[in-house]
Image (tube, rainbow, N blue to C red):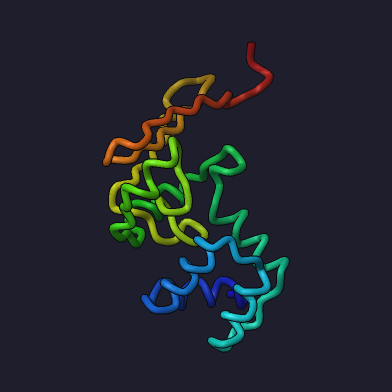
Amino acid sequence: MNQMQAFIEQAKKDKDLMAKLDALGASGAGADKIIALAAEHGFTVTEEDCRQAAEAQCPHKKGELKEEDLEAAAGGATTNRYDPAVCSQYNDVHFNCVGFLELNWCDHYRRSVDDSSNWERRLYRKCMMGFFDVTEVKDKDPGLT
């Protein structure tokens, strides 16, 4: 396990550390702040580690979901991140819905995938408090017409 993975695993177990990471994510802090926080906890991570972790943990930003991501989400950590003043400003998933690197989902956020069609995949994202309900359709095989 590399240092970034170990740091993330530690954050999942340590509520105070996760709160600090969430605060950094909410403020839009750069990799330098995450690197410094990791160092405070005995981990050596690089800017490249931060970039790779963000890509690995946030598959919807690339338009794809892996099956193991969905399975992990079912048993993942959640918390009540609902804040009407913040949530009402968005019409799709945002930081408050999923937390730092999507590690700490709001209790009211739901995401699912329907892969049953031969030519399309549907990604559903919904706020159970009613702020958004989005369906995104992706071609499974862009070569199909």
